[in-house]
Length: 439
Image (tube, rainbow, N blue to C red; front, side, top):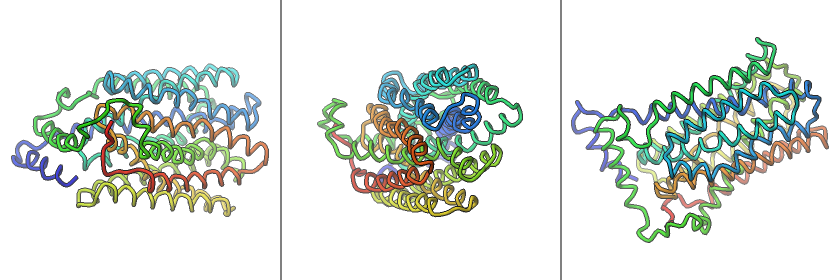
């Protein structure tokens, strides 16, 4: 990792009049914006669920089914989405996905029952699926080795930021317009517009972008040359060979545990705050904003800390294992404490602490580019996110069944606690962050 810094830095700084442009950072700010919209749209159902459940007369089990349905097609399309990004490049995949999910978000406003609404959620999941694998591939293409932590957390930081903004925007639109349908239609229209801007600005490679100067292109290429030197000379070239390695399974199940906790909070915390602590739609929106915005701040801090520590000379393995260990331990303790506390304000504080530290694990989006060659990053990103979204499929349904059977959220919170413990094991013990796999 240190050799990359010494190789690339002189090219970037020898002539102060020709400093590298910062297009790569602007692209990842755009990805932050797109992923935020992604989560505003997917979280809109959670925020509106108390109203939808009343209008459609559905209980917790059917609500869990609706909250889960998005993840069925989202998980199914992860690996195909990653392979599309590898084949056609991330630009067309990202823009097409954004246009598609905006369409399904908008037509959900016309649904008159829970079955049509479920179908629109299936379409939303299929359309959103490629965005993360394609973003992971962008990280491998555009970012240097000591920038990928921040690139990963900018990419993934849209999740808590979008969840936070979604709580405020969707609940605010519902409160002002008196209709969850109008809120969904407006959100969908805005997403389609964002897809157009993504197509206009994103490029598949630095030298294809009109805003990139020669210094920035060479800076990125020097880092990539050092990275390529670590690739195995006897790579098999067969993607299925990845599954022979423990690191890939650690990545898969680690991201599954992470998302079991995160998606559990995303899909059920609005209902939990409403039913258990008596929050109305405005209070609930404010509390969810605080919680998930804390997650966004935590994610940005985690990415900054990882890159700074690595640039100072720490090994990639030491940085990631340490940060993942701290993250998972504190998040697990905090979510467990929620089961012991009755005060609503203290509960929101604990949930905010959970998300602040949990979201350090957005650094997982470095792992595909660490383990794989640039030609396979999309596939590995899709594989990782498949694991995460298997949890997205199961957790909302399981929580709905638990709540319906027990009339309590205690066992659901214990499920989230177990997921935090699993995240610790996978991220600190199973993944070798020091070398690329010979595939």
